Structure formats: structure tokens, C-alpha cells
Figure 1 (cartoon, rainbow, N blue to C red):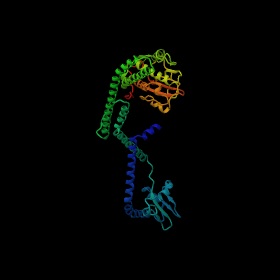
Figure 2: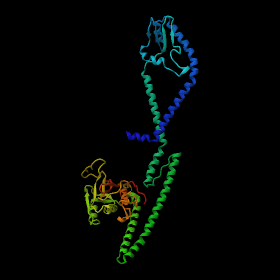
Figure 3: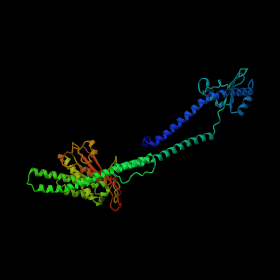
Figure 4: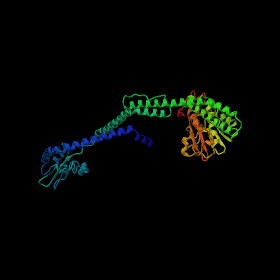
Length: 464
């Protein structure tokens, strides 16, 4: 309820409807008060003598001394209330209205010379024998018809308000399409422009945003093409330089040169791979992949000399994934833990992702995985500052406290991991574990044969 209220308070549609209501009430109040002030003086000047003559006739009909029978007959014939107070007769033809005496007789319309009360308007007569006769309008009997009309009026006002809200919502509906499209452009998805359905200011805004998105897309594609061309062109001279370096005699300079050339080759390979993954799920070659078996293979081969512990849940079974990209993800994560783990062992895990505030739910035997899983590595190093966690997946980003060039790497490992996770429909989650850092790909796997074609992943990648 609170969230819905906050949403409505931020809604332009709700604010516009409220503005219309306030303007309508203001106009009605100004009209009524102004009209009253304009006609009050002239109306009272005409009404007072007429009312005085009418009350004189009523008092004469009651008689002097007042007659109870005539007073009651008068009250039955006319919608008036007669009250008589005196030494011989005390009468109130409408005693049920006694609680309104003070309010009715002292009610004021205006102020000063235009004040209205029973005495000032001549509604009271005094007889020669000492009786006081006061006339006033009788309160009408309450009727269900009057109440029903009030409810109908309220319902009509509510219906008009809802109609105004619907009209404002229809008027501002292009803003919803623009919001969705802007979020899509922010994720790097430029294939679907905003549908321009209106020939007004909002339609012009949508067309201008489409032109801006097309321009941005063109610039990003040009940058990407240039980067790919440079990377491809650098591979050949880099290979020749490495071959020439291999022919040199053993020396510290030769070792440093080969190390720098290897770092350059790794940089170019990572750049090319990040550009390929810029297409999201379209860049993947999915096939049934046993991730637990893939992790064991990497431990036995690539990381045989590293103290890597395994915590794997074999209940997942084969899933639809790109084995080459998953191998790259695991290799980058373990390399990251080895470089920055302070020499302590790391843990490579595959487990069900625990729901927020609870433990992982047990999987049903033989059922396809219906929840999110986490595949990642935890080290026991110093970790990183909390304000740097959100930037670790950015290309070439190195927190000074934990990522330095002396530690190796080119600053693209976690960036590639993030692109691989997004291409598989998931996300890369980083968390300080005190001690250590945990980095995991969190996603909902698709079992081959159960899902014929996995739904497109939300490509949140940005060209490197």
C-alpha cells in the first residue's frame, strides 16, 4: 500500500488530475462567493419589505391573543415553524427542531448592515397582551430520495474524476513507451525504435529520441568496427615480434619482453571476445554442458598447481550453455582469485542461489531447475572497498587497493565474466565475504530437451 501511494505521488497523471480538481473547486468557490457578494445587497433590499409584509399577515392570522389551533393549522398548511411564548400560551409547532433554535435564529448571512437574524429580518412579532410570536422555516423531513441524490452526486463526481484520469493517462501514454525505449537504449539494444503514434509534442519528442539513439548507435558501431580492425591488424605484427623474441638468447630482457608480448596478446584476445559478446545471447553456441564436470576438468588441468577447492552440486545436470564461454568465465574467476587471494586457497562452487532472507530450496527429483543457480569462486584475500564493488565489472577498471599492474592481468577478466553472465540471461554478483571476495554468475539454467529455445537474455553489454 505504501509503495502504491509513493508511486501515485510521483505520477504526473495523478498530479494533473489533482490539479484539475483543485482548479475546479477554486473556480466554483470564487463564482459562488462573488455571485453572493454581487447580488446580496440588492436582493436584501427587495426581499426585506416583502418578507415583513408576509410575516405581518401570518401574525394577524394567528391572532391576538394567539390561538393555538390557528398556529397549528398554519404550521400544517405551510412549511413554517411557529413558536409562541407568553403569559397565557407557550407553543412550539415543531419541537423536534428545538436543538436547532440557536443556530437558526443567530445564523448570519454576510456581516454589518447585511447581517441576517430573526429579529433583524422581522420574523418576530410581539402582541399587545405580552406574547412573542417567532416564525421560521421548518426543517424538511429527511427522505431517502434526498440521500440517494447526494450519493448519486458523489458517484458522478467520482466518475468524472476517473474519466479525467483516464483521459490524462491516454494523453501521456507515449511517455510510457519512451521510458521503456530509453531503458532499452541504455542496455545497448537499438534494434527497436519508439513507435511514433501521435502528432503532437510527445510524438515529436519520441522522434527526436529515435534520431538521437540512431546517432549514438552509429557512433558505437563505428567505434566497435575501429577497435576490431585495430585488434585484428595488431595480431600479425605481435606474432612476428614474439617469434623474433623467442630467437633471442636467454636473458632478463628477453623474459620481460615475452611477458609484455603475452600481456598484449591477452589484451587483444579479450578485446575481440568482448566485442563478440556485445551481441548478447546471439553470440553464444549453446549445447548440453555439465558445469560440474567442466569445473573438475579445469582443476585437474589448467589449475593443477593451485590449491582450488570444489563445492559442486551435481543435482543440476547438463544445461544449455556455451562451454567455451563458461570455461573462459571459470578460468578468469580462478585467475582473479589466484592473483588477489593472498596465497590462500580458493573455492569454486556451483549451488542453488538462496532466496532473499532464506535458505536454498530443495530441488524436486527429476524436475527441471526452476530456480536461480550460482557458479563462481570465493577467495580469502583482502577483498575490495565496498564502493568499488559495482565497478569491478567495468573494462580496464583496477581498484588501487587490490588491482595493480604488478599483479598481472589487463583489467578485462571480470568484464568478460559479466558479459558472459548477461549473455546467458544472468548477472555477475560480487560480494565481500570478510575475508575474501566472492564473484559468481547467477542465472536460471535451461535444461536441454525441456526448453526448446532459451528466451533471449537481456543484453546489458556496452561495447568496450
